[in-house]
Image (tube, rainbow, N blue to C red; front, side):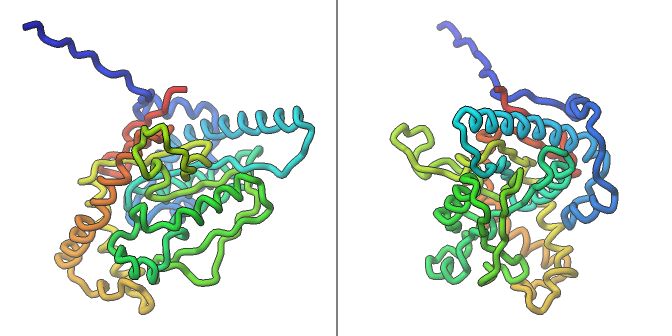
Length: 320
């Protein structure tokens, strides 16, 4: 019997190692200080200036080129149509697991992108504000599925993105408090026609709720509003380690606040904290990663692949 010939599938991405990606910085200046970086990094992330120079400066240069091209196309279209509507923000979506460092990535990019002269106003919104309030989650019996796709008010989130992309002068987003672990009543973040809006969250790259390749689906989804998408990736064993480390550090910070939702964890020993954090990961965050978040990685235009030390090992950029 003739053996079948194995034909490797071509990747839709171009992969760069650190050295190759760093070279794409070209002459992009470093516009962030050590003090700023210390304020931008996560609780248990030790981000170095080398990481900013090697990874985030080339990425800010790439995004600046994308934004500039979009701005030129927008202006050309409006010249052709003969109208002068309000500007439309360039929207960047950043996805990834709990504790993988996507919030730090979002904050660093916000800072770097705001230093480019053609788009100085860069806003950042997290999807936490579009979670249903705890009361709704409890009524629906999905409190332990907080962060899963069904725990978000998707209609409200899509209306927000639609209003931003329509160029409305002011659009309000709900505010979420990690301290009380709930939506803050009557508190809002107002987005006022930024040049760039960064949207960071677990499930921002989710496909339609039916079969992804079903041609009958015409549902509007969150990623329809994005001009560029990034996925921050690491192996689950590394993310779990970071999650447990962060949980332990929070005992001396947020958990020790009397108003904290998690104040019952403040007095746990290291062994108890490890056990509790691992249990939460297994039941909630790890399950969400495997079932919902990781499968969306292939939908991103750029993937930042982290090693066990939180440093980016490679960058994958989707081919045009």
